[in-house]
Image 1 (cartoon, rainbow over the protein chains, first blue to last red):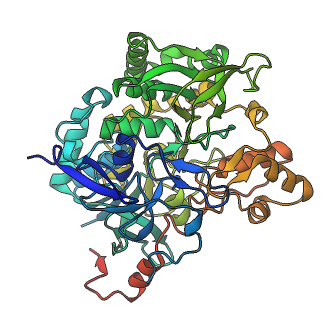
Image 2 (cartoon, each protein chain N blue to C red):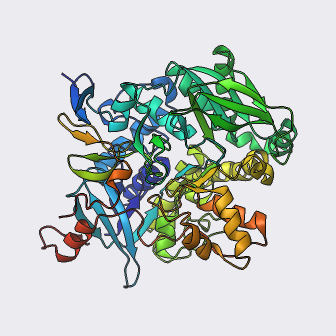
Image 3 (cartoon, each protein chain N blue to C red):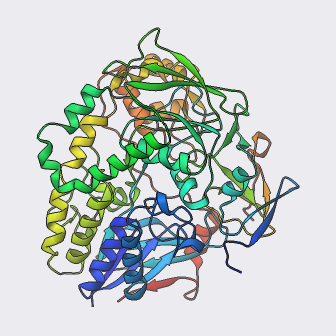
Length: 97
Length: 469
């Protein structure tokens, strides 16, 4: 079977979302009908995809424990655990050991 | 043997790598993405032989020829984010992290080549307007990328707005991906567009492919029954959790909204771009001279002001893929120590005037600040409003860009002012006389994790591969 037809499953804040292998994490989220996933630190405003090419960092998520991963740039892998980021995460040490 | 490193695998970088290899150099081609082709030929890696959306790809056979050439002749390193260029020694050293985007355990690699070709491209510039930070408002580039690579329509009823010929393919992409495109709104009035494109139009004859491309897009707009309106703009987006409607207004020639012309249109996705900004991090890190218009200055062989550095494509001026390929071929051959192919020189000359024309026809005009309100977010990362910026400027009339950034945090967030930098500069100019500071210099070309830097410092020889001749 080609990579194109293979499915991947992510958990996004505990919910299972299926996508196609080769898609970005943002692509899987958008295809599942989610338009926003991050909340801003100061205003708690919803954010999602904006530039789509890795420049604006608006779409960042935590992937498998690593914070600030650009969802538009990172390819989705089966079993990825994705957490949305919000004001509650500010100042958390994140992935640094 | 001359070792040439090419940074960026879009049309310019692919052409440069292929030309350098053809001229006998050893070539390393680096790109941060997982696929070759850059944004112009954006596609999913699995679709490399047959793109998911073939109707949205231009000159795909050209891509395949360049791709096959570089795969055969060059060392290709994908997922390579070049984060620093060290020019302190006799030969420049390029430092990259190789691996999954923003991953934790990327491999640090560095190269010390004889020649570097920078072909890092450009990204959309979007001016702020009330509500532009709502989910569902994206750049036209994002709409293109997601239609091309993932076949995703970003909304059911899509509005495309801003300035420039790139709005047309963005609208066609959205329609092809399954959206209903309510309209395409170009800010410049017909008079401005005509004054840019029409005078001595025969001089554009060499760039006939662009004309055919534009005609094709206009035919597609007609086929999809998408109206194209000039002298109009999206001046506000409305919604709670995501965009639900926009206000569209007529603009005067300076882009000031015409009072009373506003109307509200329901939409669930808005694609907005007002032009492009070159990705200057690496040229600036290398010390390359920039023009007054803030593009990399190159000579007839695409040499920059810094010995050992060449530049090609959109970082030398926004002129499209054909010009980028021509410039890449010239740069690659010259970097390899060969004489550039006269056909590439001729092709480049034919596209030379395109950039000026585009700026004259579609350039940003200063009246746009009239659609801002005090609450409009200017810096998306740090959530700094227009009102706060202006109040700070008025409170400290002598403050420069740096003080303004420190006082408000505008431009100090995670995108490193890539989105708002030019806008903040222009707002200062609008308030008072221009300063000479810019937002282009970034100590690190991309955000790097502290742990990865530490790994780079202490890395054992097996972890840290120095690629030398």
